[in-house]
Length: 202
Ligand SMILES: CC(C)(COP(=O)(O)OP(=O)(O)OC[C@H]1O[C@@H](n2cnc3c(N)ncnc32)[C@H](O)[C@@H]1OP(=O)(O)O)[C@@H](O)C(=O)NCCC(=O)NCCS
Figure 1 (cartoon, protein in one colour):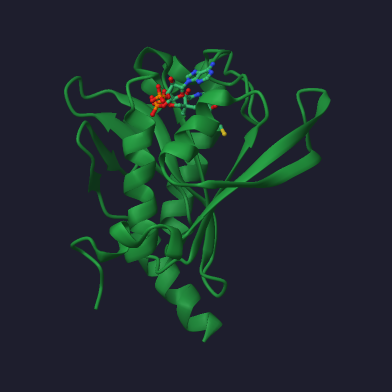
Figure 2 (cartoon, protein in one colour):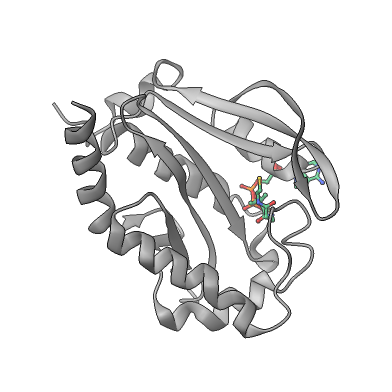
């Protein structure tokens, strides 16, 4: 049973579909995204609350891009590139960090270029990938972690219907210090409207 689900998971991610949101296209990352990735990933404001540090050169950006392309090839959960439909730029990434198909559970993460903050873009992207989680991955639980001081990320999760479940004290050691992480999750039963939307597999 678990092996069959893992095969299904791999097939889905090897052929990761595009998702349209009102203002963005979520698509596979491409080698040509490197400059856009470096442009926002080198901004220390973007990486203030992330586990990674701001890129200092384009070579620092390459491993993330290469790793993501490798994960597509291996059929492992990974990020979509967020492409802004009007200017055509790759303005961030969002996706699943891990997926335990036998537990019907997965975790999401996201980051967005600073010029696009506070316009509701990640909220619409998170809505879309969580819907993908219900319909295509058959998830029961989607979770996310964020730092205590990352109020924008907490607000995004609340707007998307996630509930705060607790604080993991000094859960990670990052940038020279131990950091508390807040755990948020949304369950299938919390989102009946999304489950009955068009696209639900019978
Ligand atoms: C967190 C992040 C993804 C949010 O993306 P976004 O597209 O700006 O999010 P949205 O516009 O959908 O929503 C942001 C909400 O946070 C609120 N907000 C922003 N800064 C805030 C602050 N300092 N204090 C309180 N609320 C804040 C906004 O007002 C908005 O809420 P509202 O719609 O009720 O007004 C973006 O800031 C980012 O990429 N940050 C850097 C990377 C990162 O932290 N990733 C998440 C790691 S857990």
